[in-house]
Length: 300
Image (cartoon, rainbow, N blue to C red; front, side):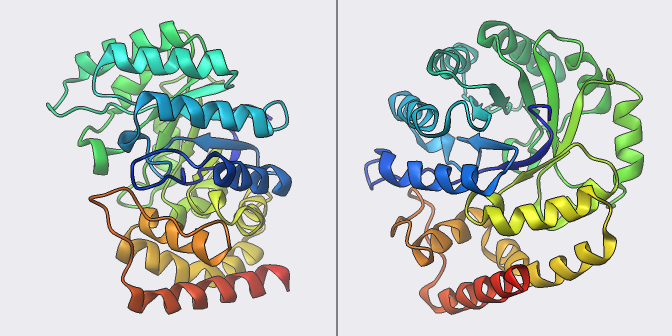
């Protein structure tokens, strides 16, 4: 399977209060994803809190991933940074550690123009020397990739895929047709936004970049494989089982809920990096209920 196809699981990066990566806990999370049979790992994505980590800690996370699961499952590493030269350096670190691919978001304090993003991505793709996935995440970066810009970037050497947000109108087929009509046939188009990912896969998307897959890979894979097979009956059944969790993702943000799940699953009692706070203690029972409901539905 291509690097940017199927289920790509995005785990949290467990850290202490000072931002030092807990490599043992990270290795446990990565091993769970690998053992479940996911198609790739998305390391240091938004769920992996890349923006909160110093370069040395990001390097330690990549080295931990490659030492733990390298060669057994592809590892795609987020290299987003405010400065182009910093992103280039992070891409070099990832390649040097043995990563398989890169994920890049247009992180900036100053709103960027399309030309600036084109130059930024071209520079990082060239210096990184690995297949790179565009991270279109406007809710965080405040930059939205037009299909015309995607078409230009798809022709840049090493840029091989895009990670899209869910379309506002849920019209995946039209969006996929538009993008595929403007990009090379080998250019992979996937989606994030867990509660809409099965619809994206059913519509023909190449990948689901999954938050929940980073902590519950077995359950996420069950949904992904049903959607890839076009089994709408099973997709509907599993989506019903996921609804409690999706509602918590929407209420608190999937980032916060993932830390709660890590504690419930015995990975460790970690908290999001400040200033982000955990979900309220009064809502933990809701996460317990959502987890129990989902696991019962998947295990049968």
